Image (cartoon, rainbow, N blue to C red; front, side, top):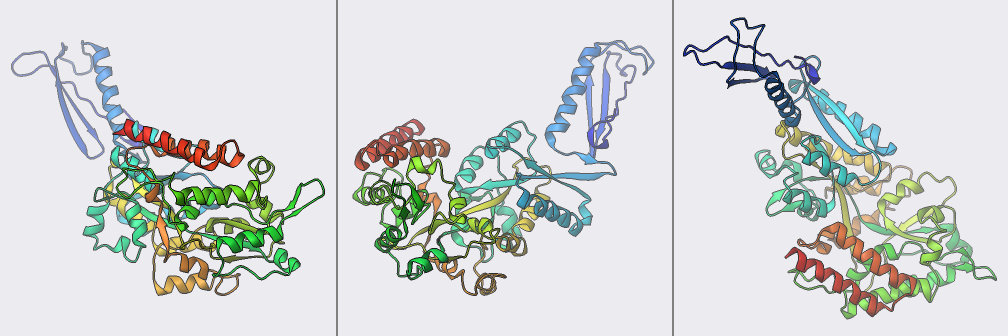
Length: 480
């Protein structure tokens, strides 16, 4: 019997055992595994014509084939091992990831790999990975987004612990990698993924807007007060009050950074208290709401429906834009936008989140050593440089060579990326905002729903934050 990948299941039916008891010895070979099952059956002497419960035999064979499929140990024509890896489909990355896979296979001819890149299309990429893992049909390696995914998937037994492989390899895979990034994917001492890139946020600004207004460009001396004062000068509205140019876009999306800059936090360090109603938080969210509703220097929730974030900035409808380095990949495509980068304005201190995308391996991959080597290959410095060059991300390793490469980015002003280099020194982990007893999707849903009430002006800031605290603590009690 031929099955997917060219494997053969061979079955032999002896007529009768020496003791005379009717039985059959089912012998089969699947790839390099030999199996034998003895099943009672009534047979004629001929191994070809046999009497028995054919439905039972068929059930046995189907179960065995299901076992093979679930094992993931498939073979391609020619005896090669099929090795699958996945990520969310995106044109900018798909060819790069495909080429990387081909390069890995060429680097390891001894494994005779048939490497297959399988894009996961549509939305809800994490849900689709979980579904495949539960069905024992997961790719060998796949992208893991952030500390929350590592925590969730690690505890659910979806991810392979890479730490033993890293230690056996002399720690090469995490050498010089930012410790915050390694910690993001470490759960109870197990390392579930390796960072394939990282991002911190900065202040993008349209130089023409500043030149036309005769204003100095942003620099590392800026504070919240400087940001607001400049945004007010750069905001233009017509006689009807309709915005022709916003002074600032994107502030509310970085509320975590603003909260940290104001010495606030969502959770206490031991995760026993929600701190969202503390004075530092009230002050932070009041500042962000006032940018929209009082000073009107940034799009309100209603205006946001008509604006397109980075697209509005690219179209010259925003003088400043706050966001991660990945937005550079959009801005580089513009032939008219004259933009530059500065550090985020500081509050009581400097702070910006360090976010990342990583590669992890399926806990039940039939080829764990190959999977580890592939993860290591996809997160090596040379691969990450490509993502940096297209404006998507920043290097994960802190070396003199990496810093030099960043500060001399081709096609951009020399030293422009100093804002990102400096930001690594005051970055914080988004793990600070994760509670181990709360599903991250549910926490995000609560925050989105309750903050929207604040942004829309439906409730005052203290009332809205109390609503967040109440709902989050209820989730903690459920998870306790």
